[in-house]
Amino acid sequence: MRWANPHTKRRTSLSQSHQTEEAAQEWLDALHTSAARGIDPTAATQTLAEYGNTHMTLALRGLEPKTTDPYLAGWRLRVVPALGHLPVTMVTNGAVDRTTYAWIADGEGRSTVKNTLAVLVRVMEQAVRDGLITANPARIRGWQRQYQLAEDELDDPRALALRNWAALQELAAALVARSHEQYTGWGDVVTFSACTAARIGEVSGVRVKDIDTRNWIWILRRQTTPSPGGLADKNTKGKTARRVPLIEEIRPMVAQRLLTLRDKPDARLFTGPRGGRITTAVLRDATHWDEVVNSLGYEHLRRHDLRHTGLTWMADAGVPLHVLRLIAGHGSLHTTQRYLHPDLQAVMNAGRTFSNHLTPSPGLPPPSPGMSATRRRL
Image (cartoon, rainbow, N blue to C red; front, side, top):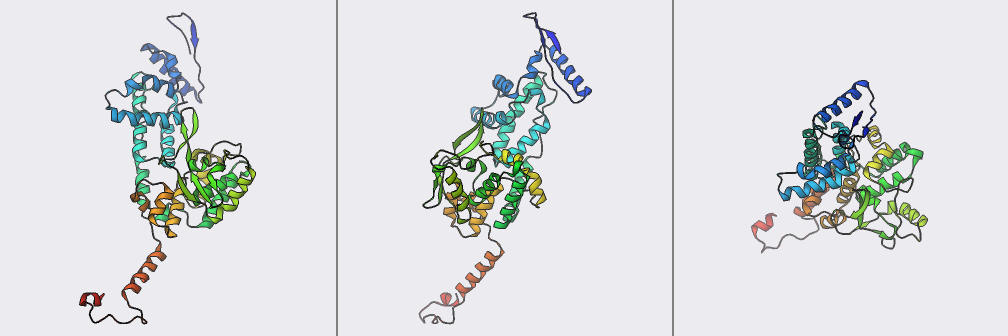
């Protein structure tokens, strides 16, 4: 596409590749339409980040300040890192759909995703008004159903948690086998995440100095998250450090990593094969996560469910609720209580305990004569 700039009189050109002649012609027609409306064709090549930052005030007009702040946070922390590099005209419904489900898989809350999508919808609606695109690709449906599925599955902890240690080891080995050059670090990341009930971003943030080998405690201080300009280490989700026990099953692996990183207290304990920071998306792509979990029969298993696995195992092992809350970093006991899913054996044991409490043992003396009738019946 070539045209003359009416101000400078210089000829400018713009090119873009398409898979079919029909798609190329559609692109040319869109530029002709934009030019006829007085829109600079170069606007079509602006990235989403550039376009949104330029027109954000117009896109958010009419909103109250209390709504604007979470919208802008969603734009800055999620939309720009995930889609900001794409030209406005290349932001498709499929791209938005896949990105939204990635946010959900990363453990983002329903309101967070809603606010993030809302600001993206407004920016893309402005692009429609500007004539850059003909339909708003950010208007997607069905994503909230994923939260309903997760809430339904919480009644059955085995739906979101791996069964046992053997299942975890099987998953880790399968992921390593599918990775490039069979990088064993991916298996260590998955095992460490499940055994500490930590998010993948928190595992990425572990430094050598955070590990207390005398008491085998991990001082969880930071997490790796997407941010403008790339990945960044930030405070934990709860903004406070917390102590997480390192169980015996993972101590040899942690000790070996500490040995190779001795005298490097600020070194990361877990990295990608080239030393890069790890995210849930990186783990997914590098290990062909979706294909592996499907082949093992865990169709709905997400990376975040490794955290659910750890918390469920700890709850089933009898870790007290208030201690589990501190390990998880939950803001309220209500959130932690979701993980208290007693299995069948635990329920049977509870029944026996209750029965033993009500039925006096043969070796115990009978109730004293002075005890009330009510207490004698109990």
